[in-house]
Image (cartoon, rainbow, N blue to C red; front, side, top):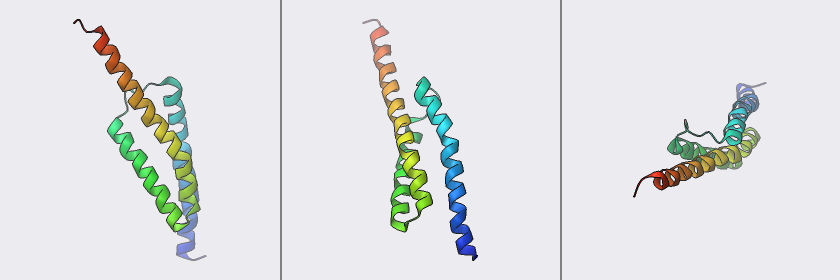
Length: 100
């Protein structure tokens, strides 16, 4: 096996580890809707990065990148959406509690 082939096959366990490591945190965040420790800007950048990695994977026909980012994208986008929604809800609630 050449070095290039070995490096190509290393992508599969790397993709599995990073994707599956993300799933429990995503599940917890979506289940509890506790987004107090999450930065919307960071998650927006992360989600965009996942989209770009997915596009790159399609271009390169790299199935490890395609599979990992196809799984990660809806999870990251869901967390971002939850963060934006919960922050908007908190701002509305704060405005409603302020004396006029």
